[in-house]
Structure formats: structure tokens, C-alpha cells
Length: 74
Length: 461
Image 1 (cartoon, helix red, strand yellow):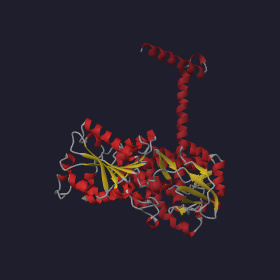
Image 2: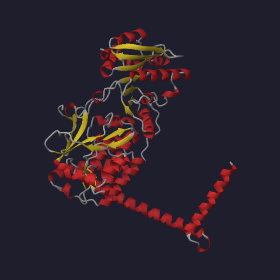
Image 3: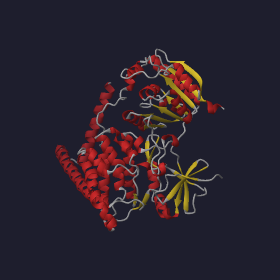
Image 4: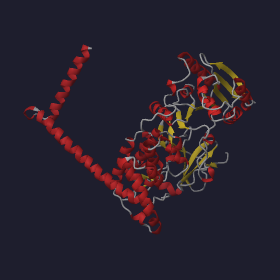
């Protein structure tokens, strides 16, 4: 270590890093909560308990076909 | 083989030393750094960082070392023109900071750290902020906080936050404080601005430094402090996010809309461009400096002839626009902030640690388009002095004379006495003929301006 890290800088770093850790945990929690509700919303729209992945694939296939029609009309 | 010459600035870190031999730059890796150097290469960190463009590539060479302590001698890819943080625009400093943090983050993932966070270790190669100090890595010791955190805040965060929140010109403070802006000064200048990010890393940091740095000298507490790795990573990630989010306030500087208010008709602008291209071709220059380059519009003409170009301008927003362009195109152009009447001096220990602007490169050609009136009239610089200075730094000169009849000069003379009887076409030519041979002289259509191509008399001997 050829730099003097400075005791003050080390102490504040520990405080700031602890805050960042809490912040990062909150972000992860917020993301998982929002994806949970988003997932529920989507799952609610899938008829007869069809697997969500299949439903999403079909949805995107329909979108592709619609886009294809629009393109051919141009 | 000629004698090796040690690079003066290479004295802080005992891990190695930079030297020049036969005009080639080498870095000696000392024996005390052998384990770290091998780990950098063997862990795959070197290859990963070089591939991403964050670290300069090097090759190991069989060249006699500078001293007897050598483990290896490496030859890094040469940076065409070294620049310093007080010459960078906001975006350049921001990208340099992000490169530093990305490198430290990648090092942590391989059980290493970036042991220093000096802004001088970052250089711009074709618009890419690149770490040039291959010996900046060390091993991560379990629970060890980042030892370069304080330096990172002084070198990067303080100037960035000041530029974004107080004044865009405040990066010039780095010229006075070679190891970064003191945090207590930055805290005062921020005056409460910058939000929680500035509070944590600058204001509270400054307080902690004031309160505890003396304690550190009395005990070995610094070495005992522990920070879990995941917390350090969370801090680095948070700093990356916050730095990415920093923006300049919408300010309009003097030259911000320069190209909307020039004295050229479209035909004149086209002719000027063609003339500059022709003169550049004749100069056959490998290195070109464009003085008063604004966003580097004319500087780019030199790129067509394969030259490496430095675009110097006094306006921080013009330099920023130039940088954002190069960042996209990866051209061999380096926009830098420079007041020609007060260019970067040599600073640091023995006034030699960081070189003056003119000690870093001798350009083959200088372009000075629509800048002479600012030097001669706005700054009272006598034409013979400008000519002598130009001759001392270049062999070929592309220079535009803007006479007193030009509306831009009229504007400059509106608020002051005309004490410039020699500022005429003849006076200009007389001054420059003492040092240069005028190879070509062309009037620019629909304007009163004249473009000259000159060769230094010394180079013609």
C-alpha cells in the first residue's frame, strides 16, 4: 500500500457502504415485489390455467403476425 | 543502444517505473510486484479489461530494464497525446471516473483491487477513457475497505459534483491541487447542492477526514477497519449509478452557438473548408493541433489525411460537444480545454511532475482559424509575439487573418480604444515573415478574411 488511505476516509466509507448495502437490498425488494404483482396480473389474464410462458409466446406470435400485416400493407 | 531516460512523474509507486529508450516508452515491473503482475495476467483480469477497452494493452519485451530490481519490462500501447483532468470536459471526467470504478469492480470479482484512483492514470485513446497504469492492481485482503476511496473522491467526485452543481469551470481547481480537490473546499463550494450523494462522499467525508485523520497517525486503527466485500461492491455500484446520472445544467457559454453566428455564407464556408483541406494535405502532418477549435468541426478535416488531432478550445461546452462526437466515432481526435493565453503549465514536484501542454507534443501543423483577433485584440498580444510563439511550436501553420473591417473584430473594438495600429494585413504578414515563409495566401469569398499556409523558416533550412 503506497497510498495513505486516511482513517477518516475509511470510517466514512464503512458508513456510506452500509447505506449503499441497505439501498441495494431495498432495490432488490422493490423489484421482486413489482415483478410479483406484474406476474400475478399476467397470470390472471391467462385462460384456463394455461402455462404463462406458452401464453406469452402466443401473445408475441400474434404481435409478430399483426406487425407483418402492417408491414405488407406499407 | 541509447541510454534509457526515466519518466520524471514515475516516482510515487515502488511497483515499477516508466522509461524511454530509443523513443519507445517502456514500463519496468519491479520484483516486489511480481505476484500481483502474474495474478493480473493469470486470473484473466488483464484480458477482460483490455478487451472491454478499460485497460491499455501491452506486450512483454526483451529490453534492458532501467534498474536492477526488474521482474519484467513491458511495452504499453502508446497514447498519442497525454492529457490531464483539468483539460477535460465534464463528460471526459465522468467517463474517466466510470472507467476507474468499472476496473475496480472487475478487479474485486477476481480477488484484486485497484490500489489507486488517480485521474492521471486515465488517458483518452480515440474517445475511450482507458486506464494506462498496468501496475495499479493489488490483492484484495478479506474485509479490507477500498484504500483508494479518498483519492477517488478528491480526483473525480469533487470536480464532477462541482461542475454539475456549482460551475462548469471548477475542474480547473485540479490544476492547483495535484492530488485532487480538498474535500472541505469542495464541501464549501457545493454549498449544500448535490443531494445525498454529495453529502455522503464529500460533506460527511470531509468532516470525517477532519475529525479522524489525526487519530490514524496515533494508532494503527486504519489497518483494523473491516468492510464486508458485498458492502464494498454495493458502494461501488451505487457510485457508478450516481455518476452516470450526473448531468450538466443547461448553460449557454460564450461560444455555445458559435457556428450559428459565423461570418460566412454557405459558399464561403465551403471554400474555407476546401482550402484548409488543401493546406493540410500539403503539410503532410502526422500531428495537428487546432487552436480555438470549438467542437472540432475543422479539426476533423485533418483526420482525412491520417493525422492525430488535438482540438483545443477555451469553451467547456464546445469541448464537451467535441468529446461526445469522438466518443461515438472513435476518431483519432482529442478535444481539450485550453485558454491559449494561459495554457496548462508544468505542475507538481520540481514543476515537472505534470508537463506543460507544449512539453507533451510538438505538432507538425497548427491550425489557427478565426482566432488571431482574439489573441491580438481581446488579449493585447502583439502580432510579432504570436508569430514567434507559433514558430517555436510548429513547422507548418494554417492561419486565418481577420481584419479590422470584419464585423467580429468591430464587435471587439466597440467597447475599447483601438490601440492596434499594426493590426493590418501588412502588419500581420510582416510579423509572420520573420519566422515563416508564406507558401499560399487565399482570400475567402464573400468575406474580408484571408487564409494563409506558412512554413517555418527553420524547417526549410
